[in-house]
Length: 266
Ligand SMILES: C[S@@+](CC[C@H](N)C(=O)[O-])C[C@H]1O[C@@H](n2cnc3c(N)ncnc32)[C@H](O)[C@@H]1O
Image 1 (cartoon, rainbow, N blue to C red):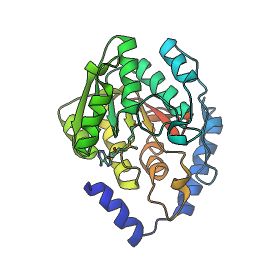
Image 2: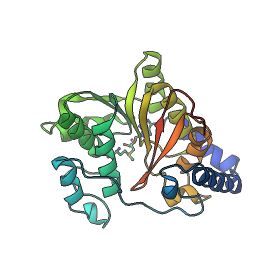
Image 3: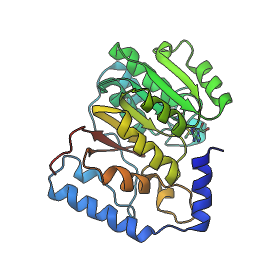
Image 4: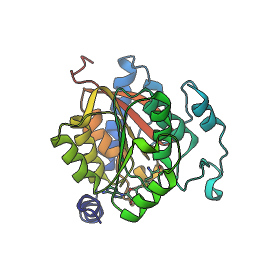
């Protein structure tokens, strides 16, 4: 287990966090979004009122339409999209992943490969847009090998680098090499500390105008005091507090933020 993952489990047991403060903070952010007239204010869900979201953007092209029409019911679960690779994505997740990867102002970084389901969507988008590369990071080498096998022959697979590493470690390396990305998808370990690390590193890794998307941000596990999930809380503490990020909506179980190098005046 990676160090940040372990820290999450230990911290939860030894120092039960203050959910009431996070709930209050999530309501204050909603008020701030509404009073500033932010475009996506209506999509923000406070921590004590989490629910999943349908995709609300336009359908861009044939590949995107394919995701909009793909069957659900993967592994017998009525809301999981079936794209021929094992994984746990809602249609709203898949459509947003494609849209952001297709429109991203730069290369793409993914934390959490698993069997390559989300990576296959990113790869298709990079193939369709005709430029850019993807790096996907996975702790478990067997998963990474299987993902590479699953993507072989699929559009865009030649643009993907499969890296076996702890995501925090690899994102640190990439930041110190001066790498920058137009879109970062955070979907590895959904505990508080790992997400804090990823959010901090996203600040160093995103280009101006780039997007970061946090998977399982809307999962009810975040609001359950006995659950190890802390995606929502980490986003509140590292992204929402930073005026360089603006809320760009929710889709499926994900939240999206856009990064601007120069702090906004809101
Ligand atoms: C939810 S799955 C990723 C799903 C994938 N994005 C998809 O849509 O198919 C999370 C993956 O992150 C990996 N993981 C867990 N902790 C990690 C860490 N600290 N760094 C990198 N990968 C990690 C797990 O082995 C698992 O395969």
